[in-house]
Length: 196
Image 1 (cartoon, rainbow, N blue to C red):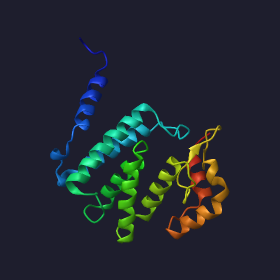
Image 2 (image 1 turned 45 degrees about the horizontal axis):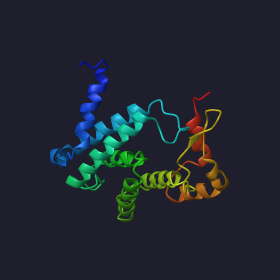
Image 3 (image 1 turned 135 degrees about the vertical axis):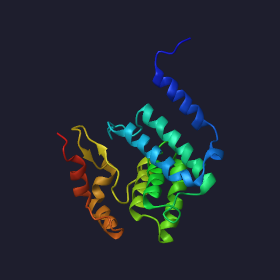
Image 4 (image 1 turned 90 degrees about the vertical axis):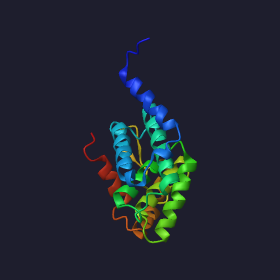
């Protein structure tokens, strides 16, 4: 039997690899390169994504699951890729994978707890903590604390979810407290730059 779609074959082989426990294959010295590749894959699949559909499309979900499985293996072998162990770029890559793990809420919460502790210990990013906090809140149908998560309205413009629109003043105060130097209004305007 010959498969007509070679991309399916590649996807199948990659999926099989990531579904196995690959922690034995991970060397801590390779973590920066591993996470760089995961972020590249994450960003490539999200290029044409619309925030209107919070559950994403199938390809995004599959990439996210694969990335989370690899990150979990990295954490088992090497611990969380913190700014204490690696540079900020590596730590940010781990955060981004957790941020996009919308179908693994328990992993997002575990990651949030780690990042919260790192912030308390003085080497975590308060901005990354804010984004992940809001992402979890949105995934639970709760009000955001910082207003970092946007959705697309009927006109194709980025906006806050309706639940958050009555608290913009408080969102801006919360942003200011953590050094997020952009108001919710300017954040939304920036997200809409270049859109028709």
